[in-house]
Length: 170
Ligand code: SF4
Ligand code: SF4
Image (tube, rainbow, N blue to C red; front, top):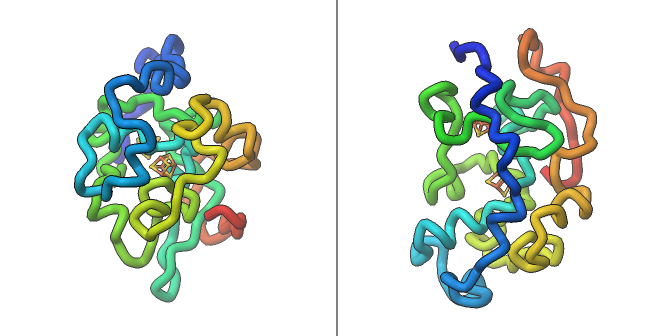
C-alpha cells in the first residue's frame, strides 16, 4: 500500500537541465571506455536519460515482461520526473533501485532504450541521449520519453492486463 501523495514533495524548482550543465568533473564520453561496474555514483546517475519508462507498471506473462501504459502515481508525466525521488523507496515498496542487478535481471524489465541496459549489452548511447546532446530535453524531443503519450494513472486501475502496450521502444 502506498500513502497519499504529498504535492509538497514535488520539486517544481528542479531544472532537469542542471544535471548536464557542468560535466567538468567527469571524463569526456566516460561511458565509451568504462564498464557499468567501474562507474562512480556521479557517472551512474548521469546515465539516466529521464525517459520515465521504468515507472510504467508491468506484468510478467509467460516469462516475458509486458509494459502497460499505466504509470506510478508519483510520476510527473510531463517532466517524466519522480515527484518523491528522495523518498521513493520508503513510499513505494516496489519502486526499484536501478543498480547492476536490476539492469541484468531476466526477464528484462527496463525499456530497451534504457542507457544502463544499452551499455551493458554492448551498445553506445543513442544520439538523442542528454549526455550526448548536453540537453535534458533531447529525450523528449526525440519522442523517447513518456512525455505526450497516452497514459493512465495507476490509481484505481486493477485490471492491468487491459492496459498492455506494445510500443517499439519498450
Ligand atoms: S528507463 Fe532507464 S534511462 Fe529511462 S528513466 Fe528509467 S533508469 Fe532512466
Ligand atoms: S516512486 Fe519509483 S516508480 Fe514511482 S515515479 Fe518514483 S521512481 Fe518511478
